Length: 199
View (cartoon, rainbow, N blue to C red):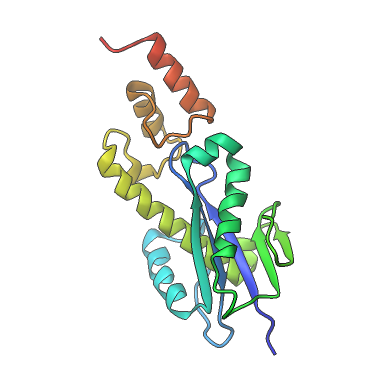
């Protein structure tokens, strides 16, 4: 009997805007998926192709998020762990119950199953790689949708990360509703806009 594990990873801890996402994936040992890797090492096209295959072949998966308001209220680490817990709890446990949850990084969420952290797990464990891809593609898709509501910031291009283009827009326009007010560059931009209002 093959013991099933649940891989968990996040996307979006570092950006200045948008929710943080997490995914939990239980792969089917009988249906291998070629090309799984850390989502950051894959092209956008490859991630999207693998996303389809993961959703088709996995025994179970769930993608969850923690909102910008939650990030600002409890900090990014706790919000990330909250999104991870939601992803694990969203699995169809009655159908598929893994014996262990393995999480990329140093921290683990509070869940009912045995749980351990694996540094660079997204490169070492297929289930974590798959979770990394699902979380990344889901978050990127949301940021592209939000770009139409906040076109001045270029979210479709940088997905909320602190690129030069994003920082320049942040300084000239000030923060919008989906910026993380608890992050220093966002606070600074808001403060500067208050001190130097547009004429």
